[in-house]
Image 1: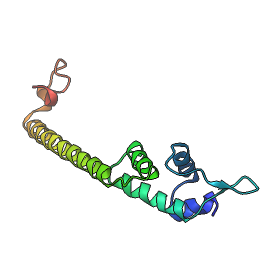
Image 2: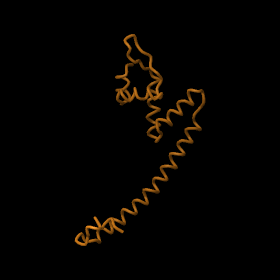
Image 3: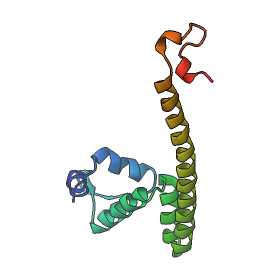
Image 4: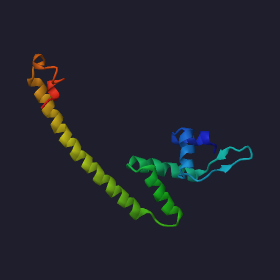
Length: 131
């Protein structure tokens, strides 16, 4: 199939497919006599893998490392599990940080309800955000 057909099938712009090729995430496609890229089902499989891996929070560099392991004949499962474990730890850290931010924002909102705008001075800029 040609790049336009592939793009339509997977719901990606042709430019993204070309970008993945430049990054080494997709193998160099066969070229027809007219120079057009010709793709097969294996490219669909690879694009679906990339999409699923991105949805799991993996970066393109991490996805590339998985593809490279497979290309070298190694099962990348342990590597993938390690990457996913790390992503989960990062998400949990961000959740804790967001919970702290949430509490701080609630405190600021509560304070803003108690303050009178007439009491705000030029030195304060906005006394809602002054401690």
